[in-house]
Amino acid sequence: MTLTTTDQVLGTTLLEVTHHTLYRFPRRVTHCRLTAHLNPQDTEHQLVRRHSVTIDPTAEVRRQGVDARGNLVLRAEVDQRLDRLEVTASTFVELCTRPVPAIVVDVSWELVAGEVSHRRFWPFLLGAQGIPLTAAIDRYARACFQPGWSLGEGLIALLDRIGIDFADNVESARRGGKESAELAGLTIACLRAVGLPARFVSGYRVHPATQHGTVHSWVQVWTGGSWLSVDPTLGRCGRLGHLELAQGRDALEVAPLAVEAAAGGRCLRETTIRVRHVDMNALLEVEGAQESPAA
Image 1 (cartoon, one colour):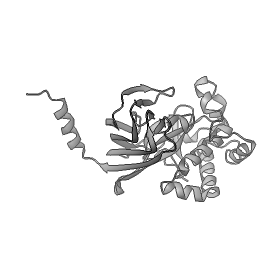
Image 2 (image 1 turned 60 degrees about the vertical axis):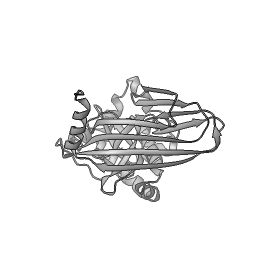
Image 3 (image 1 turned 90 degrees about the horizontal axis):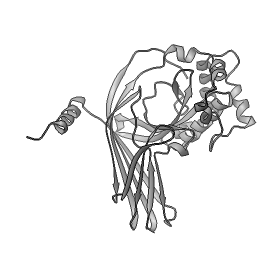
Image 4 (image 1 turned 30 degrees about the vertical axis):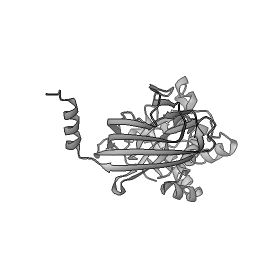
């Protein structure tokens, strides 16, 4: 793994990402509740231009809010008999390619760990579901974060070791498998074991060339002044090119979509994510037409 360090913005891409999920219930349900982290927020790596979520059948109750971690969250309830539920999210977003500033990765990892004391970091230092803080994890992590090393050196060693020791999982995750969440959990456990705050991130890994995307998980580690993105699936830091949906303590907190159905049994879920390049001028024309007053 290597780290590119510069403050230069390398490029911006405007994409339309459509996330469609179909739930099929083995028998009709009378009530369905869903929680969606599908509305991304503006960050230094992304600018959201438009976003919408449709639910079919239409939800009788629909509330947009902010969760405990500051993520935008949609909570909705469908109170009728149904055997299927469709949720479609459409997002127009600018992704900015910005590598990691050199000062971020050159800082001592021991310095960062030693200065973490504020309670806002506590949730990102403790164990959680899928993030075990065991003696074995501690040994695994400390073999990578040696005394006197920089944060960048420790991250390189950790991601390289995970890439070797869990090569099959990495390969499956790169093909779009669910292992990216497991790899993110392992990486977070290792970072927390050495005292570095780390949080779980959910979002999309986009493939504009094939008009395809996948639900993806990665990590953000605290560097002393900001959060640095780390992807054990790709073995990369900082410049990922992913679309971030939400961040939190563990995978359960930031699942893109969670559905609870009353007496519906185990449902079948089909998810499709489509990605396409969008011409900026065309989007500006549409936005201008929507804002213009009627004649």
